[in-house]
Image 1 (cartoon, helix red, strand yellow):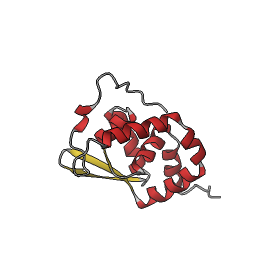
Image 2 (image 1 turned 90 degrees about the horizontal axis):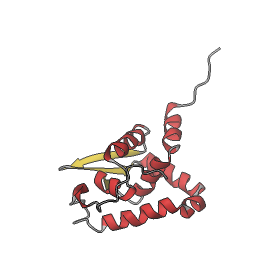
Image 3 (image 1 turned 120 degrees about the vertical axis):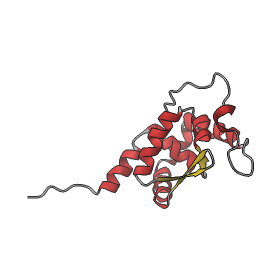
Amino acid sequence: MRSSTPAKPIVRVAAALADGNRVRILRAISGGELCVCELCDALDLTQSTLSTHLRVLRDAGLTASRKQGKWSYHRLTLLGCTVTEAFFACFEQALSADARLRSDRRNLERRLALREADRCCVGSECRPVGRRSGKGRP
């Protein structure tokens, strides 16, 4: 008798959603494409931590990336838009009450104000001194 295995894409998406930092990343890029340095600054995550989470999200088919010069931009895929819209709708009350996500939103708004022509132009050098904790836990 053959054992039944869930479809791999479903398991990958569920695993991607099962981490607080990945939910924070998805919440941030649900507003539009963001550069790695913008995500690092807004979410207070190190580049290596962020890269690990972005790889999981990309492997699950939720995000895609593109390079432009020295910057790497990340966005939701069609699947990512569909999944996050449904997922966030189910948990909207909890998400809107989460202090960490509200802080992320404020940090992201400040960081996006530094853009020129709707593109990142400063890299990670604009991070306020002493802000980096490297932990980034929700």
